Length: 254
Image 1: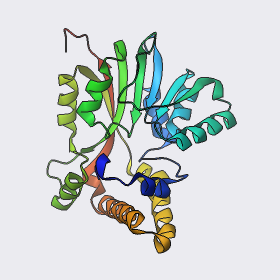
Image 2 (image 1 turned 135 degrees about the horizontal axis):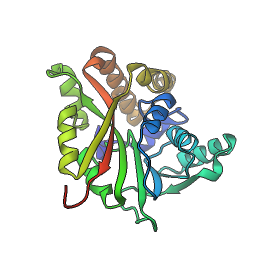
Image 3 (image 1 turned 45 degrees about the vertical axis):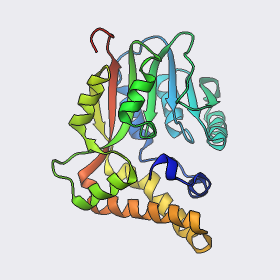
Image 4 (image 1 turned 180 degrees about the vertical axis):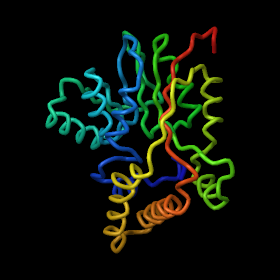
């Protein structure tokens, strides 16, 4: 579903206290973070952090302060409590704001982390929107959904096209990143079990609990979610979340 068709009250009712807001795992976040080259000076921003599972991993793994940004205050409050419990509160700053109008940091941004959130502005839109924030040679890590087969199943393609996710083959996203002024350093595919264990499985269980008393708006969100899970269960080998590790190229090189 596209951003402007979501009933956000119903969405947050379903997603209340879910462990994460998209496919992923702490192990994958840590593995990608450890694969990064030495970071340039500048802030680290986690854009669209949600409840912040990856924020905690980044702070712990990189031993660097992280600015966690989201528009939904309850997510930020959960993250702040989790950071305190983990002994990481000194490394995590939460900000309730939109990543569509971020102010420049005084010393620039060395790393932007967008785990499962770049779909909101769109892959190309996000790359262009955030590029000016990065210092020369700054890194942008974005996970986004992509086709990993040459001939995607028609039913899966129709579903994602209607959803507005804009799924493209991996090679198309790599080309688009280059056209937006980035060099691809590496790409990492999220394993299928990371979709199920921490995302779809608890989401499906909560959907089943909510359905008997759901009104029309929530029922629509539940139906859309159950349909998405069904598509993944039947066609999940044809698409994947991919972590794209990108480096900002010099303006005269992009």
